Image (tube, rainbow, N blue to C red; front, side):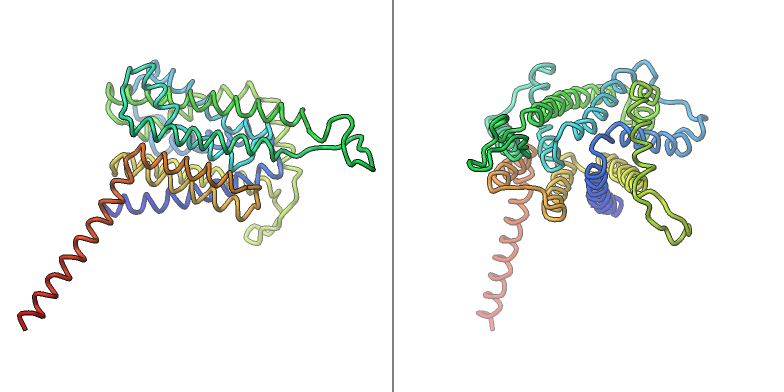
Length: 354
C-alpha cells in the first residue's frame, strides 16, 4: 500500500470521526440546523474547488453541465434530506446505523435498474443488515421520551396520553421516511455516477467541486430556515478565543469545525477510491462508522441497549460479508498461521540437524 493511501486512510478516519463529534454538538444545541449545516459544507467545498480545481474558473470541466444536472439534483436532495432528518427526533447513533444500510439500497436499485443478480451470500448479508437496522429502529422508537400532562398522582398514569408522546413518535416516523427516501436516492445517484465515469472517465476532484457548486442556488428554497438558524447560532453562548482575543459564538465554532472536518473526510475518501481497491475503501468507511458510533454512545451517553448492540453487530457483519472483506481478514490470519507453522518447522529441522 502506498504512503498516499495510508495517509488517506488515517485522514479519512480522523476527519470523519471528528466531523460526527462536531455534528452531534451542533444537534444537541440546535436540532433544526440541518439546512444551515448543509449550506456551509457546500459553500466551503465550492470555494475550495473554485480556487484549486477550476483555478478561478480558467479550467474547462471535462464533464459537460447537461450531464451533471441529474447528478447534482440527486446529490443536493440526499444531502439536504440526510441533515434535515435531525429535526425529526432522529438521534445521531440511529442516523449512522441507518445510513450504513446503503448496501441494501444499492442492491435494490441494482436489481431494478441494472437487472443485476447476486449470490446467496450477498442476499444473506443484506438480510443481516436489514434485520439489524429494523431492530435498532424499533428499539429507538421505544426509547423516545414521553410526556405526562395530566397524571394521576396515585396511579402515576397519564389519563390523557397514557404516557406516550404520539406527536413525538409521529415526527420521528417522518424522519425515518426521510432517511429511507434519501438512502434509495443515494443508491440511484451511485449508479448514475458510475455510468457518468464510464462515459467521461473518473473526474473525482471536478465532480466534488461541481456537485457542490451547482446546487448552491437551491438553498434559496430554505432561505427562511437558514436565516432563523444563523440567528440562533449567532446568539449562542460566547466562547473566548485567546488567539483572536475576542469572544465567538460556540455554535459557529462547531459549524466551522464540522465544515472543515467534512471536507477532510470527503476529499480523502475520493483519494482512497483512486488509490485503493473498492474492498479497502468499504472496510475503511465501515470502520469509520463503527468507531464514530461507539464514540457517540460512550462520550455523548446516547441511549443504547443490548438490542441496539445486537442490531449494530448485524449491520456491520453484513456490510463486511457483502464487501467480502471478511475473506481478506481470514486470508491475513491464514497467511500468518502458515508463516508461523513454516517457521516452527524450520526451527525443528535446525534443532534435529544439530
